[in-house]
Length: 172
Image (cartoon, rainbow, N blue to C red):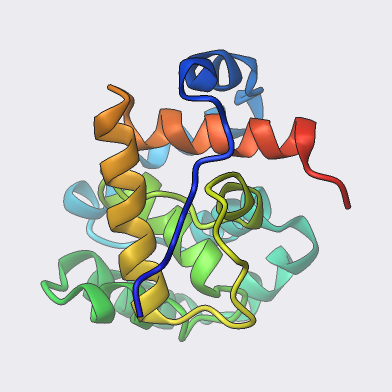
């Protein structure tokens, strides 16, 4: 079933919201840009740092993953041709669910993957699903890429605008 969305941000204000996003905390993650194609895998320490950025309260679960498991799963994910395998395999790691897997794909594989976040979902006017599925993820990716292209933004710039708009306007 297709996801219906209705961008809550007035289109002329996307760049303004993106510009107000404080991305200093993610500066440490820029070093992971293209680590998938270059290094080919993540270490447990690298996984923990990414998990900590996405969800501080769950990040220590990443440290429970044995080093060989992290390397094997991320090696597989980074080289997978099937999108469902690429995303789903990452969720086999402790501390990694769809939102964190999306961060790994965004920073380590390809920055045209959006970061799955309840704030961005709200700003797109999409109903928050009770559980993430690959079908939802796949359509979310297409929506974000389409909206970003339509407004001459990178997917990351759109992510920032969506997050910031929610931060300033979403109650609760």
